[in-house]
Amino acid sequence: MSDTPVIRHYLQFSDFTADEYAHVLARAALIKKKFKAYEKHQPLVDRTLAMIFEKASTRTRVSFEAGMYQLGGSVVHLTTGDSQLGRAEPIEDSAKVISRMVDLVMIRTFEQTKIEAFAAHSRVPVINGLTNEFHPCQILADIFTFIEHRGSIAGKTVAWVGDGNNMANTWLQASEILGFKVHVSTPSGYEVDQSIAGIRSADSYKVFKDPMEACRGADLVTTDVWTSMGYEAENETRRAAFADWCVDTEMMRVAQPDALFMHCLPAHRGEEVEADVIDGPQSVVWDEAENRMHVQKALMEFLLLGRQT
Ligand code: CP
Ligand code: NVA
Image (cartoon, rainbow, N blue to C red; front, side, top):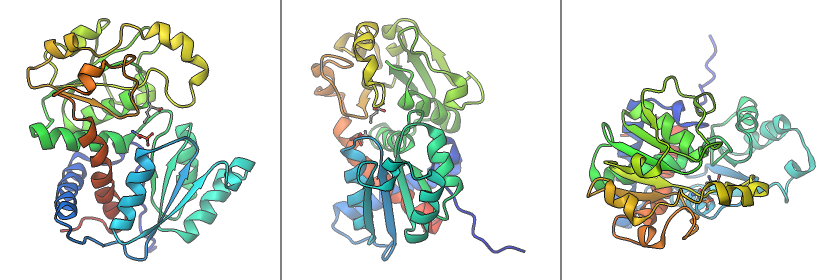
């Protein structure tokens, strides 16, 4: 009988069960509380995280790097430009080498198939720090933020206004696992695709032509940039197509009176969101950004050490 430990990866939101999310979110709350009290929490002493960025980042880099140091570990930062990854070393070879030297790998890249190929050849857990298809760490932080402000997200309604992109796909996966509804409104040609989103059915989401209707009665209104990283060539076409998908005060007014506004950032005021909304009283975007660090600390702890009590 083999005693090879089972490696858990976090490549998409559906990699964890609802029960595992309950555990990770509870740990994140504890880890955040200790951080705020300047209490050390260092279960990952001598462990190393490699972070591989094939796209730009502010939040993902700072939150993983600061978080890993706070857990007692250390970090190696690689980009396509300063590693052999940019000179066509096969991803499988890179995975085999890097995962012999570190304990955990976080990757931000283009196609989901790339991170899957890396994970298939990695000896250590791999975390998705954003792909074209998914952004699970962000949705984990968003759900943690919702719970902090409003309690359980089960049974609530999230309005997604904008592109049927990596964030939208991940919200859809989360809704199936955690039992909430997503109202999706995208311009035509930018719809969510159930097979790309990797969801089992259309039961947890509803599509609206009019973004205002998607926001009606929602407990959370959320959006993202019109043009995601890697799609810059479509910038001008997208600007025209998305002109009516700007979250404004009218959309917030038809949502629940205590509705929250979220945006994963970076944001473009005057494009996907009005300044009055993102800088207004219902916006929790700064908590969302900070919470990336707390939830990812809980995620790294879980992937390396399993359930801690
Ligand atoms: N939200 C997010 O992932 O931000 P960065 O691109 O700055 O990492
Ligand atoms: N959808 C955006 C999110 C950035 C954090 C992108 O992929 O560029």
